[in-house]
Image (tube, rainbow, N blue to C red; front, side, top):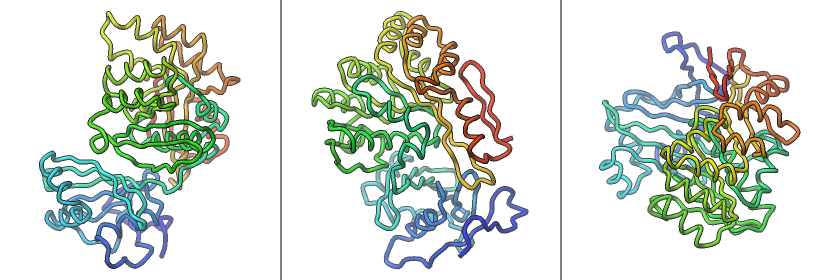
Length: 379
């Protein structure tokens, strides 16, 4: 059948196009599994389910409806979604009203599912996790990413908005360490998206709420177990950040993910903002000493929305940047990153200009920068 390059007229639906499934539905599997298969077959990044609507695929910023799919009423959609939940998960969802989980099968691969209740009934936003972990050259500057993966201690941050590819970059760094170094790696994850088999390293993945009560308990356990590498998929509290920095200070490599809307300077500001004014001076001192690198990224659409490419700002801590952190001159960090090309650094603007020279980006993508923050809009 035709793929997503074939677009059907949809004048009354605005930006939503229509496609057909590429294969006949499988028998003997939950009904929703066939939608996951259709999403993966069509290289979609997401699939959405809403009451009184047919499933909608998202690919590189465009939305597509499946032609053969029915519109699901409230009880029909509940039946569709509950088909892959066990009794405990159903009870949890009905009690908490929101739930996040990963569904895994040979047919679908890993699917990250966010379930929620809305005015008309339940809904689901499902992310299609790539089957293969990409290598560095597929993501960004290979040498800069290798430099980060070769670190033995300190704190590394991977930052960006939701759905900016942070989890994929994190998985690629973990897998590089796993294959090329002999380390004890413990990951502490909100939800396990990418599964890593032990290679040269010994790697244990722990999911909060399943294998551990919370991040801080798991971080303490990882520190006590003398892990060489600790991975955190979120830092949301001063306690978690304190534990991460103390572990990095003691010789552990800590790789953490943070959701941010700006560059390296904003990520540092957000971390320091956990602390009171009286605590700020010591927090800046400790962070300036343990910080090794920051990656800030965003996915840019290729021409005609045929794909995406990650734009990355990369900071490697230097004596000058460390001084700027200690003296709270965060607005000057972006300029220092821009001068550090020889050290493997680049600003988001420099990354954008490079990507424009090697890819055909969607014409209406624009970037504007000021003091390390940015505006990225599809105008």
